[in-house]
Amino acid sequence: MKVLNTINEVRNLVKEWKTQALKIGFVPTMGYLHEGHESLLKRASQENDRVVVSIFVNPMQFGPKEDLSTYPRDLERDSVVCERAGANIIFHPTNEEIYFDDFSSFVDMNGLTSGLCGKSRPTHFRGVCTVVTKLFNIVTPDRAYFGEKDAQQLAIIKRLVRDLNIDVEVIGCPIVREEDGLAKSSRNTYLSEEERDAATILNKALTLAKSKIQDGERKAENIIKIIENKIDEEKLAKIDYIEVVDSFSMENVKEISKSVLVAVAVFIGKTRLIDNFTYEL
Ligand code: AMP
Image (cartoon, rainbow, N blue to C red; front, side):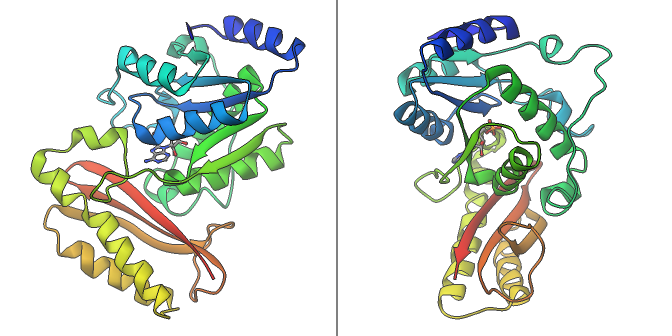
């Protein structure tokens, strides 16, 4: 496995692979890797001849008051995870390698990006779409792997690839959780012991909501209320949003009738955590 810092080095190696008709899987990440990332990497190495993982804390997708400077970073530890999971290249560029001083082109999207996380993070998805487009252009993978943990992001990337005719297959992978149900996240490291316990409320509330849908509840507003009441039981939790949306359009639904995404964002202390499930009728 090689750790490469420049676009040219990645391009040269990828070119070599392509002359041998090798299939390339790609996993974009911000590093501080956990079993969630590892599941994407393992799937990529099962389904492709070569795997590229990018580790880049993309400044463009952070808002001015967000955690860009404190976001956890540990390349040495990440290298062990990547090697174990079968990656061939870690692409670990500097900010300067990705963004020229006078960088002035952006990839933006309407509709899908306006609700859910887009409401409280209005510039986030422009940053995601821009960096993912750049990374796709650099790596030119056959397949790219994204987690369902970031369900809105996954829907956006699928739309981006369709709308802009990017020649890559986008593959969604299931959420990997801790034993007590908390979705794995690099941001879980911010939590104190007390907050870590409190954070289980996201999955508890979603599990309760799922069981109510299974029991026949079809009204989105009732599902939202059930989740809200459950999360309110936890004193350290402050709700950012609870939404029931169509899985493809990300538009709010009133009645649960086909495939819906039930998604939450909750502050536990200062840490904003997200979780979701998709329900197919
Ligand atoms: P990040 O490093 O947080 O930008 O995440 C990189 C990729 O890993 C994204 O596609 C995430 O959706 C995915 N991911 C993060 N956490 C998990 C998880 N717990 N289970 C599955 N995929 C995840």
